[in-house]
Length: 543
Image (tube, rainbow, N blue to C red; front, top):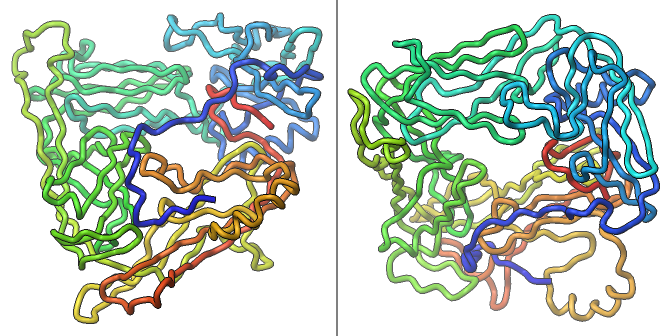
């Protein structure tokens, strides 16, 4: 097994990759059955509400959905090798029909979205038309299955939208559309109509434009800042309305921060996440972490390394060896640190995206905004304790119950002593999920042991219970520690996080020759029965 030092994970910076499932239904294995089942969590229910709804359904109650709010279900093909595959949208040969289309229709990718007639609902989407009960039938090859669906009256509904009070030109923000429907929180993006209006004229706004993704999410992009440039977001759900006014305004200040800044120095070798926030004249703010480019002066390339991920809302920072002139050997921390400078910029000029170069009155080209530089002190440190962020159960065991086929990243923290000079230390807690080694079962970090056990391992090799994304190059760091349950329900596996520190760390006692410091923590991962875990637009594979 390859061991990665948490201090030298800088090589091979490249684009992040995503794993995708196979395209062919069943992957060439003969199907033996067909199931049509609710997709409770895709409706926006909380985990507890989804569990209660699943239990009621398994006890014979119909799948209940709400009038005028499309819902998701899932078609599962079963195969002769025991695999189960979510094939809801994957094959045109799977056909859906309803016993009463006045109550409920089901899309075969042929029913236009309510909010976008040019885009059809995904296959298998349930579109309720009126209160009542209907039976949905699914056919594939010589297999057929059905499910009873009860459409409930709309009743009480309160839509709400999460959206910034101000929007920067050339920046975008997601319209998070949810609603309290009959006491439950539902995701209603694909049911909500959206209109953007100029507050002053009442006409469609030229200051913004909206784009809707295939899964129904809506993003609004700022275009034209101007004097008194206000837009209105009109959000219509069924027969209810929601309105929110917002400004399209020039950025007054671009602020940078460490995502979890406790006021103490960044620790050499331990990565952190960065944030960028646009601040407007009235004090309103918009998060721009995934839309700026972070940078640092070239002369400080031995203090900070940056990876602009433009994903998950942050970029990654890794403090390096320390002060100018240090030339550390691999695996060692040399130098006593220093102060690194973090910069970022954002281009507000969106006029180039307009169909004409003639700008409306009051609108001018805007300059690029430079962030106020953020100084980040960098110091050496030594970890004293390591712990998974997994709570103990009533028996004192730390067991992570993970549904079959699902993934999670529970995270690992370390208590770290930072040396600040003159025998002055401070202890901090840092997220080290991206910096530790992950060992499954009896895996070892010792290469000699690994080589000696190779033959035995090959003889005793069995199907894995869990898969873990290992810490490696910076390109994989944001997903490091992500666990996927691939075993059978009820199976368990040990998972250890191990942090290795070797070489001399300034300010701390030197280790004996050849000695390395290791600290670790262990959890037990148990595979439990799956309800759901994947977004509806991702067909996924159920092993």
